Length: 84
View 1 (cartoon, one colour):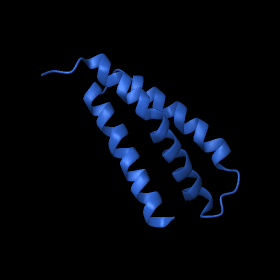
View 2 (cartoon, helix red, strand yellow; view 1 turned 45 degrees about the vertical axis):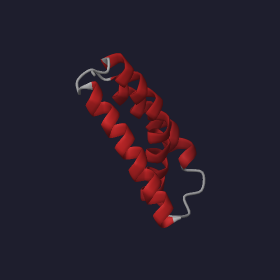
View 3 (spheres, rainbow, N blue to C red; view 1 turned 90 degrees about the vertical axis):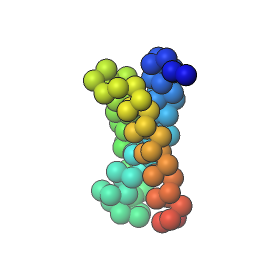
View 4 (spheres, rainbow, N blue to C red; view 1 turned 60 degrees about the horizontal axis):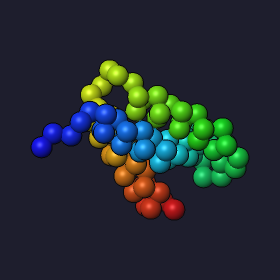
């Protein structure tokens, strides 16, 4: 059974929020260390917008975009559980 490409794109767009959030917090952690203060207020919105742009970008296939979003979200979750 094939899944329609637009369904995968919508799933990637839905996964863009947790992926972008994790990416933004990870960037703040990498820039300022564990006491990053208010830095995620700047990095999280930019990362969410970037992940939405990636989810809607036509160049990679819809399955690739969805796989990147799901795998990245899982990795950010595991990273947070290991180091929190």
